[in-house]
Image (cartoon, rainbow, N blue to C red; front, side):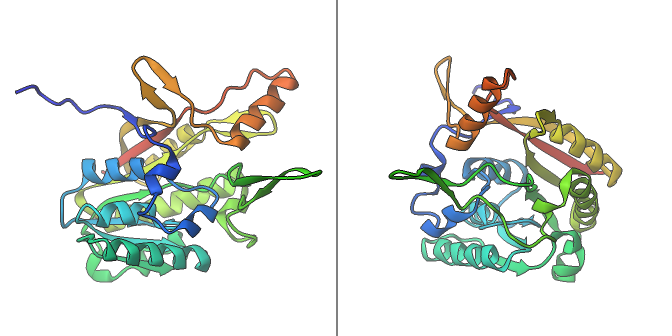
Amino acid sequence: MPIELPLSVWPAAQRTARAQRSRRYLEISGTHPAKMLPAIAARAVATYTQPGDITLDPMCGVGTTLLEAVHQGRDAIGIEYEPRWADYAQANLALAASQGASGHGEVICGDGRSLASLIDPAVRGLVALVLTSPPYGPSLHGRVSAVPGHGVRKTHDRYSTDPANLAHVGLAGLLDAMRTLLRGAAQVLRPDGVVAMTVRPWWRDGQLIDLPGALARVGEEAGLVLYERNVALLTALRDDTLVPRSSFFALEQVRKARARGLPRLVTAHEDLLVWRRH
């Protein structure tokens, strides 16, 4: 029997994001500007947990982590700051239950930085996987539609208008928030549990911000040990060819940058940072 080796490159975009969510997520979930790819969440749940384990997402959005967990027989807890997204996440969990998902999920509306105090005290020390993704400031995601005589209209491209939302606090504020959140995550993990975070580089004022590298350091400062750094491809693999899955906005940003003489490329992967407790 051949030995299956763990891979550090995850082919997460063999199907489009829309196809991955089709019939498993409510259509209105698409209004969230920056959803984790279901294939990334599903792979992380399968890799780092077993049936019956507990998975937690302290910034759960519309509930991608939770849905992929309950469909694999895991229990899931989500925390979401924005009531609108929390409601959608809970509705998605109800849809999963109606489709036969055997895991149980719940959503708490609150600030993920206070996760240790928001979840049931009985769960502390039992969480097998904390899986999440940070906001990236003003989002380049969303939807586009052609308006005759007015070009392209962009919609669903903001997390929130609340200035306290972490999408609006800037890089320094985001790193501080993630340090607090990761400390809380360490408090609720079981001894062999892991924290995983999908994150990609961030362009600001023409400069590429190494957000994955910055967050790797923040995790160490929060008392965690970096265990793995995987690559989740945002392009499909077809034999020896990469098939782009880039959004309209990502392509437009690259076109504008190149028009200004900047040799920018479309982001083709996300880092999946994985930490363990000391």
